[in-house]
Length: 115
Length: 118
Image (cartoon, rainbow over all chains, first blue to last red; front, side, top):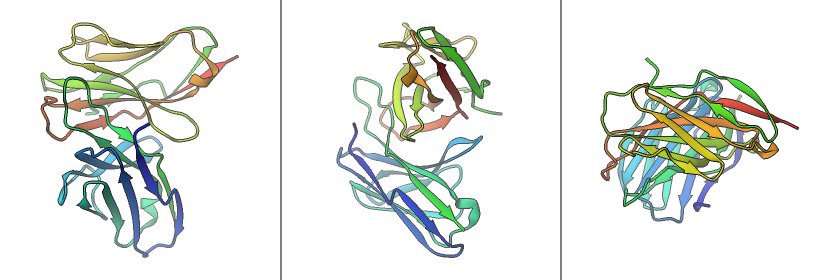
C-alpha cells in the first residue's frame, strides 16, 4: 500500500471554526491532491499540488486553501467551516509518469462533520 | 455534460457469476487514460485497473478486465467469478491529456454499488 496518512481520521466541529486536515506521504511523489466525496457526486477535486509551494485550484475550491511546504505534507484548510463542507475528504498522490500507468493512490479519508 | 457517466447506481450479482459495470466517457483529447477504483464499506479507495487510450489490448488484472470500446467511448469493468468480498462501490475515472509528466486531471464518475449475493 502507498504510504499515505491522513489526519485526523474523524472530526466534528462547529460552523465558523477553522479546520486543517493533513496529508502525509512517504513515497516522495511529486503530485498531491485533495478531493471531497459526497453522495451522488463521486469525488471532486478541491486543490492539487505539483511541487513544494506549487498549488492550484480544482473544481470545488471555494472556501478551501492549501499549502505544501515540504514534499511529504499537503495541508487543506477550511478558514471558516460551513455545514456544506461536511464531507469525506481524501488525499491522493501520483508520481511522474514513467513506463507504465501512474494511477493516483489514496489515503484512507477524513470524515468531517460541521454542525 | 458529464465527462464520466456510470448509469447503474446499484447492481446485484450471484456469487461466482461474472458482472459488467458500465462506464461511458466524454473527451475531445486523443490521449487519455481510464481507471477503475473500488471502495469497500470501510471507505478506502483501491486502484483496480488502467486502460490507456492508445493501448491496443484490453487491460486485464486478475479477475478484472476492462472492455474498452474507443469508438463508443465506453470502458466497462468486467469482474469474473464474483466473490462476496467484491461487494463495494466502484468508480470509473478518466485522466485527460497526455501522460507526459504533467498534473493528472482526473474526473470521477458517481459510482456503482455492487452487491454480491451468496
